Length: 80
Image (tube, rainbow, N blue to C red; front, side, top):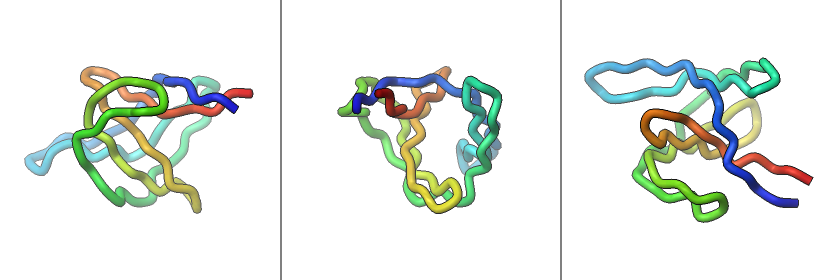
C-alpha cells in the first residue's frame, strides 16, 4: 500500500481564532463532516511531501491528518 498526496475540497470557517475545517469533500463527491479537531500545528507530511498546517481530525471513528498548504488542502490517501 502506498500513500499519495490527494488534494480535496474543504469547507472551513475563517475567524479571529484562525481557520477551522468543518468538512472534507472527496474527489468522487462524498462529503465527510469533521467531528473534532484534535490538534493543529505547522508540520510536514513525511509520507507524501508538503509543508503547511496539519490538522489532526476525527471523522467518524477514524483519526486522519488534513493539511492546509496554502492555498490548497490535501490528505494522505492510500492507493493499492
